[in-house]
Amino acid sequence: MTSITIVIDLPPRMLSPNARCHWAVKAKYVSRYRRHAYAASLVALGESPRPQWEKAKLNAKAFFKTKAFPDPSNFMASLKAAEDGIADAGIIVNDRALWPERPVFDKDAKRPRVEITITRE
Image (cartoon, rainbow, N blue to C red; front, top):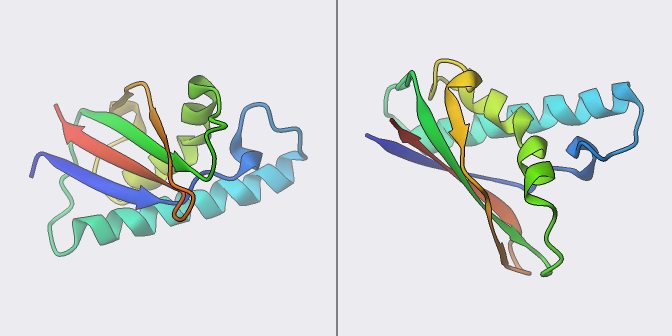
């Protein structure tokens, strides 16, 4: 196995670097989104063993309800908790091992989501 695709919900607005909220409120959102990414990672792995890759590339394709797409840099920063959840699941050794590419945005009004593909390098 050289790549894994994980499908998760879009990150909550509170995870954006531009969000203005109390740190405790943000911490709850970070924890929930990290657990969500962890669970989705385990589903993507199925019965496969946890690969523990040393270095990997991260490609994110996000689908939104409308064509009002966010700033790509802020969006990738919003995925930090998801990267931690992926590392918790054992796909990579540490989230420092992930090298993100520029995200791709598209519209899907019926099923907004993020498809994260981790590819071993």
